[in-house]
Image (cartoon, rainbow, N blue to C red; front, side):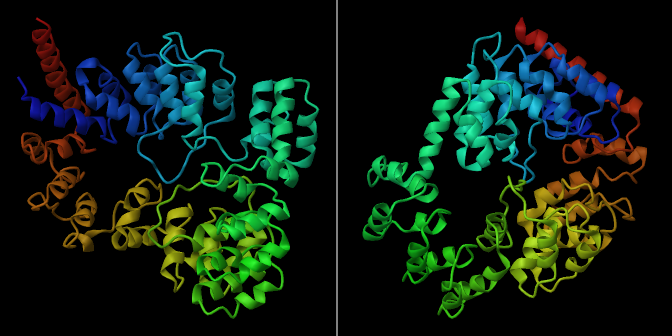
Length: 500
């Protein structure tokens, strides 16, 4: 019988073997495969035949794991949105546990299914409201979705649009205020109150309440409320509020707090105060004031804020904004003398290829880092450079299709074990470092496709390298099946004994 320690390593290795065919992977859906089958369903790309079997699998745990998979085309997962199990639905609504930087939105038809559901599954363990709650917190709803749903036939979707009032166009707001459904009309009426300064003043939450700063940062404010903010030192939300009156904005531009002046320095509605901020004693304020002349819309402002408020090791989620600046604006940013604006351009995945080549050689390191993390045409050599120099970005870079898998022999002696592990799998290596002192490096070396069948057999019996050897794409398919025969029959015997 195969020892449990080796059995688990073989199963996990085969589960993530890039060369494993569908018939091998389908065997891992067996209950006897345990955690390896669940990890496979959740964490790797799957052939269509495996996805089909997992979607119809009788074991809820398999369907739950598949529901969290970011590698499978989300359109293939649509049946899980109406799965008999509420937990499967909730896993799809909640998204992956891996917290990737690229946030993949769910297709509209899946979102519509969740938001119009009348129940939470045949098992009754969750309600449709609880599942929708998972969806709202998952970031899988694109920012443009409310506008797209404002004219939908189903009132539940128009109701959702009404709750996102300030993201709607004037025509959509008018239509919702006159909606045939009374609940939608009431939600639209409440949304309209956000833009009525007198109503906001009358309903303003008291100082110290949780919602007060949200209201002060998003709603139209009366003169009385603005003066209260200055009197009680609550001006931070005013600096971010798009509805802040011009006279209050001028006062904020001269505020003694440097952080407040930073916040207002790039606003597109800033008046002659921009020139004053260009002479500010703080260098960061002066830099932001220089950018202001290039920012004419709130969409442009938001893209600049994403850059100025974060450093080179920022790993915030990458999402598409509800409203994007024009391509011409990004092109102009790419040619700017201001590094911040070139960083903004490098963060736009639609930047033309010729400009990508230019920014890949930019003198500013953060421009190069952002290009590597955001643009699909970033050169592989740049991706590798950033991987080596910026550990914070390594998990994200490894998910990118353009990330190189060869040309790393010069890194095999690198002091960072994570870099050596990457190099250890390079098929151009004359001799994979199977005796490296680091476990991860040895495991990676065991996946190198240049290893001979005889060497792989030896590695399969070593606890330090067994998982890597089982994941080696050169492992013959019949050998994969033979390993599974040992693992699954042994597991079945153990489970039978346990039940007895």
